[in-house]
Length: 291
Image (cartoon, rainbow, N blue to C red; front, side, top):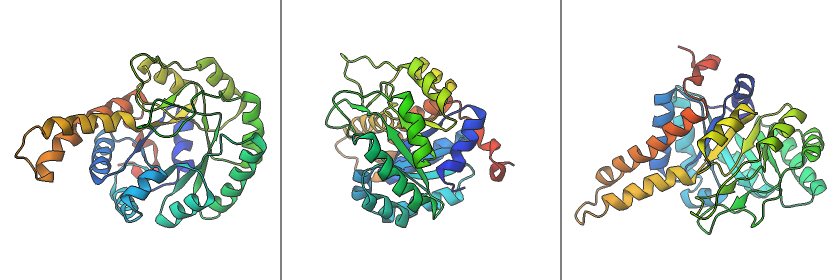
């Protein structure tokens, strides 16, 4: 069942769980995530970054839309970290049901102006909008873009931003970074800050850079009001580590021989995240998904 993210996260917000947003940039990742979500009967967000969309091409989105329509679980197709009106409009034209406009490195007034413009355009065609306040860190060149120094979300700005823009969900900066953390870097979430933000606004909160954070912190964040958590590096790392192992065989060359064990490896990570976010079985909470 294809949905926008506003309606998808409204159920998560009311029932205190988080929906995983898995970045997909190949048919193999799409297949694995859909299989895992159906097996767990969990709602899912299929996230595609503009760089990923440029690689897979807009025609790939049609496959994701078809998978969503055929699914027995709620599915949202979401533009991750859109940075311009052109990227947002392309995503809407491709069939995305949700978009993120990330103007978080701009001054607050400019961030509000940009997000407000995107909200007006997207809501007119029933597409939901995610904004961001504060900045997410980065762990290296293979990770999605982020800032060298994290700028933590100011709770006072959250109220101003949400009231002025009308965004449907808000990504907050509480200490995460995109990518896989190096061994000498210890991730740590500011849960007190998250609690303060959640007390100020009644809106689904989003955690970016959710890979490699300690499970206990992620579980606590869900209990404190996070309803969407982005996962990209963890599933891709599992997939391609297995791929490297499989390709040690110098003879194997058929995709249907190479990729099934890789999909299985990444599904194990997806299962764990779905359970951790307390999303398992939650498809039953959505009226059109009840047996």
